[in-house]
Image (cartoon, rainbow, N blue to C red; front, side, top):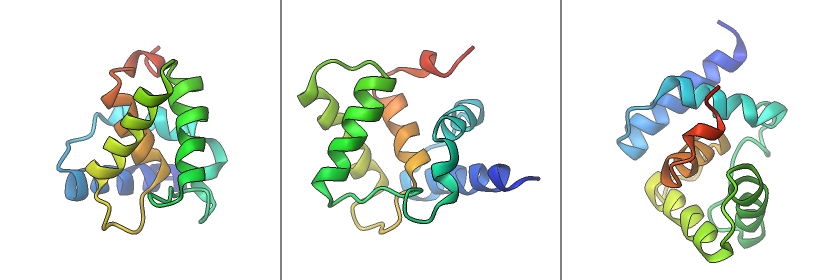
Length: 114
């Protein structure tokens, strides 16, 4: 297994243990691939749940641009719901897991399905 496959397994484990969600592995893999090289960088591979600027970036670049959600308030509500699902007390929130949770929250799986 490659490094990306190892990370996908780690993300699936986080979804199971921290979010109580059985991951759709095909969707998780597609979301992880969409994150690009950021998953390999310690800083960019995680999302700070308390950094307003970073949460706005997730809203703008992922929820609004990638998923196509037009309403800013609705988009930020989804971001906050994903942070809550992951658990505010969990210091390490992996970007791919947050993006997976957002994709499921907005029912936008079709963005990643071929």
